[in-house]
Structure formats: structure tokens, C-alpha cells
Image (cartoon, rainbow, N blue to C red; front, side, top):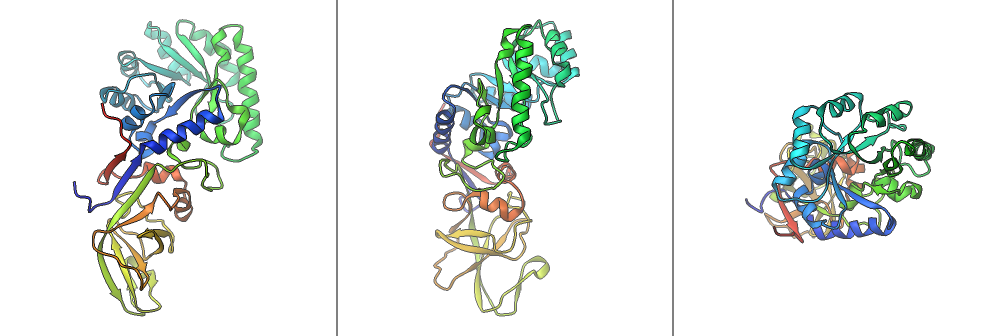
Length: 363
């Protein structure tokens, strides 16, 4: 594959340093590293092999877990969405996966299976999406009598908002349910609730198990979209200059002619667009780095290309890579320009983008 194409490089050493930051924030908690969605676009198998010190890994679906096992990833893997049918349940047994149980249908499936598996019971404390209702937690636990309960799990709805009252109520609710269920099964004393935002902004949520996701990859999960100086960005997304053009004053560039130059200028045409994961919604003036200097996006993002206004002093050659986000250009800032969040940018890197890794663990 040619380096003269859009490239996403994952710095695995940065991810390891971010893991250490998680450990520093929650030294008494076990860490379930969330590597679903191909580790938020960073390469799940490579990340898992790098983070051998993690107590467990979490993915969303059975297919993700199977790929990890086939790539040689050992250790504990948890299915956050649980299983949907008997086939999934059989795969969970074959590949020795932990299963999150979050619905009545899943309870019935587990009851009928006859096998004994490691399970988490997920309680809906305010997210309103997945989880057993609090008033049904007791009966749900009884239906799991034949399973090996690891503990209780819940998920926050507003932990990205510092001081959110709902998060405080969710913490209190899961702890109250834990105390109630403890008399039926001592494992109910074990709680997992904190995601990245919980770990960073809500110290009370750092319980027995924590589930860091985005912060492992060096981006802040908080709503203000400000980079955290204690985190190390792990993805560097760049693309090559494929053309350099002189544009006369009054000429427009790109679809819709939404940008017209006010002076004679040069532009660099860069080989990345929304088909590579650089959103069409990017605002005019979104920064990129050309030889380490900030320059601005002009014209509409197209499927395969963007255009960047150059300064007279810029010395740019065909094939030079332009940074779209990464070192020196926080993904949080670019997310603001796209009207989105860092998750969608890193997860949205397309399959045709060249992938490289720094600090990779072999084998």
C-alpha cells in the first residue's frame, strides 16, 4: 500500500501511557479496557496485545470478541451488549466470554441454556436504554442463580457533564440496589459503573471495576471538548498533497462554489475526503497542519479531496502529508469544527485508509 494515501497511525505507547493515567486516577479499581468498534478506530487486536496489564477487555458484540480471539488475544473479554440468541450464547462458551445480561429476553435465554457462565447483571439506573429496571433487579438475580455472577453493571447518561445531578443519582441508585441484592448473592457487592467521563469527572464512580474507553485513546470525553493535558493523543490522521494550484482573485473552489478567494493565492489539494472519514460537515476555516503550521480548510469537503489555503511562504511538495488531526492538532478541536464529538471521528476512519502502528507488540 502506498504512503501516498490517507493514513491513520496509532501510537500504542500513547495508549499505554493513558492506561497508566487511568490506573493513577483509580488505583483500587480493576480496569476493563473498552476496545469495541475496533478500539474506537485504533486497532482492537493491537491495542489488546499492548494492554496486557488490563484486567479485562470489553467489546459490544460477539463478532468483535471472536476476531480478537482469532487474532491471539487472551485474557477476559466481556460482551457489553450480551448475547442475542442461542448461537451467540454457544460462541460465548466456546471463546470463554463474559456476558452482560440486560433484558428479560436474555434472562430467559440464560435460564434455558442449562450451562453455567460468567455474567454481569446490568441495571438501568437512568440511561433508559439497556438494563433491568431497578424494581425487577431482585427477580432477575434469582433467575441467574445457576450462573456465576461477577457483579452489577450500569451506564451513565450525563457523566460528560461535570456536576450532573443525574450522575449522582445513578451512583446512589446502583449502590442502593447492590446493598439490597447482596443478601441473595455476595457477588452483587461488586459494581462497575464508571466510563471515561465518570473516571475523570466523578470520583465517586470509581468503584470495583471501571470501563475506560475514549480516554485510553488520548481524547477527552467531557462535553466541553477541551483536550486534557494528562492524556496523550493516540491517533495521527494525515493525507498527502496531490496537487498545488494557483487561484486568481474572484475564483471559487470546489462543489457549490462556497469559497471564493479574495486575493491571488495557492491551494493544496489533499487526498482525503468524507469517504476516508473526514466529515463533509467540516466548517470553513477548519485548521489542518501543513509542515507543522496551521492552515485552513477552504471549499467543501468532497468524497476524496479537500482543499487548503496556503501562505506565500509555504514550501510544499507533492506527496507531503497534511495533518488532519493528531499531534499538534487535537481531535477535540476538529470535532468542534464538525459539530460532533471525538468518538465519531476516530470510529469513522474508513477501510481504504492506510493503517500503521507505533510501539506495536509482536505476536
